[in-house]
Figure 1 (cartoon, rainbow, N blue to C red):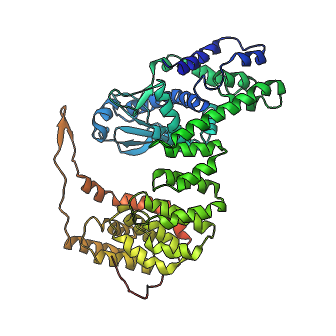
Figure 2: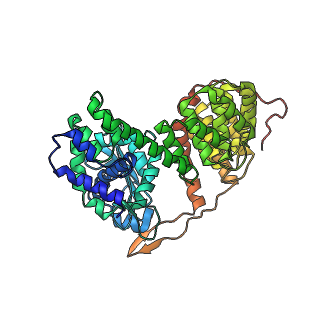
Figure 3: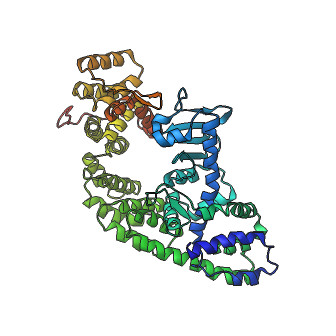
Length: 515
């Protein structure tokens, strides 16, 4: 076992000893920063130990209240969902909780507190973690308990938890599933062996009188220094060690910047740390080629929302292709919104909206309605029959929310212009959302002229259980368009309501031109 992990687990076991009478002498005997896992890693491990019990609880809910079997979900994914049970709904007997089956897992969410405990079942059990699910859990908490509150203080941006997970895997605190390198992963046996000691630590943690020595015991010198504030004899020990913790963290994150795919998370972690060289890191990243790292830099700059970045963001905006390969369109659009927010070269930036492409046409439509309605119709026509599904979905959702004669005309015109089942699926779903008899009639007439061949496959029998029917991916995509339109309408509602009374003019140069 790694020496850092061994020392940490031994520290948790020491909680069984009496509290030291002489805290100052006790602090001086503890390992220097760097001898234990970092506070960011340690609190992530504490959080996962606590979260394992939540995941086991979800498995119990699936078995006892939802008539499901984690083993079936693990073995068959969506085909293992319990018969006769809706995919989502309130948990029977627990009306404050909702469930949602997905793939090989189930998410249980609290309607009031927001807690969303999402589990994928592997090997028939709930012991394995998914970093994305755990990050979502941390972000869902409206009233976190004190251990999760400390974890969120260290990781204001939950995405940086992935850095801690990678470190914990490297020292053997987490164990990936056999045959996998990092995902999914569970707690190592050595960690579960001291889970009760970790629980005792968490029970003691909320008591302020004990936090100096408790935090120092596990190497969280930052928390120890905060708890020691005002006691000079203590801060003489805790303050330099806290500073050393931060510097070790900064150096490690700087090294991570060049590692894919963790560089983007490391950059956000540097921002959370308020590293003194953050500005230089951001400037260096912005000068590089289009990448997820640049997207992360723009996210950090957007959080700062400081106009001093306008020059550099404009340089980036000027060299990025808005219709290029992903992630270029997203980088370009993020730059556009930052520049508009700070009224920087506004006329130039607004005029560029006409160039929006691949994944960002819907956003460009909203920005044009907000800033330059004369650009809106060409963008709407581009988006409704675009090659990228999200463009079609978002533009159709925007027009449905506007629900004006001109927006209906655009939907009807786009439907009339195409006989493509896939490209018109969102348009047809949007028209049906109006609940209007005439719109329904037009859609039915189109579908009669362009009949869709059913692609449903056969049923499958496993262990005497008949499963199916099965759909191709294309069939499922067509089938789900109504729910996707509704989802986008919910997401965009507030923004669209601010521009719903705007009527964009017909472009003079090419009336009703379409791609």
